[in-house]
Length: 348
Image (cartoon, rainbow, N blue to C red; front, side, top):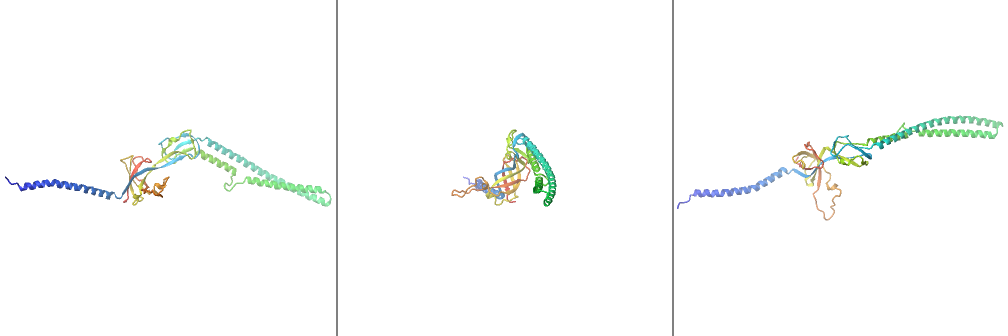
């Protein structure tokens, strides 16, 4: 029998061990790679905090009429884009035009009254002069009767009549002076509106108020934006003063309100950069920054705050609203209420 070649046996054993060793290396390297990858990912992303509890916010201006009345014209519809000063709707101006005419009538009546008072005042001056002349005449008559009485050429009755006539003339002077004072007081003006009769001033103020109310029958957009809830405006509908009739969303200014866990706030600061993505636009990424951090948690300002003073209290991680300003100009339209995902770099 031929002897076995030792070199062939060595090669056979080596070829048998090589696949086993490779499998062992592979099995050992996979966990190491996973641990190493997880460690590297943690190190790289350790300074990032993120949340998907975030929503796009925009200023919303509720428009109401400053005067009540029936709507006669509606100039906008839902989702119309308006500029500042554009007409939204118009209220029936007829009642306010009548109010202006009533104010004009009040001014005219006050002016007539002032002319009458001026005439009365001038008449009182004439009455005063006439009464003074009577006083002068009856003083002389009284002196004459008094002299005649001393000489015995007149009667006591005549002296008393002259005395009574003098007293009556003096009373007429006093009455005429009182009437003059009264007429002068009626023509007087106050320090709040010097030189203008109060009744005329009241009529002018009434007219200005009526003119202001007439101008308020045309309700215009205070800001530029998009009309929302415009279907509530219908011609013929009665508009109640102060009741919201339409809303304008100021789409030119948008931000994101992100509700972060309280455990994410340790390293968060105002001014840190943020990356924003949107559920509505999967391929859109927008840069932003932390504008402000809320002064209270969401539950603190809720209608029914949590009451923890009981034996069933369970600790719940609170959420704090963080305002993220958008520094980029988004390529897609921002819509109030869109869901967003915010990622903040707390290392910068």
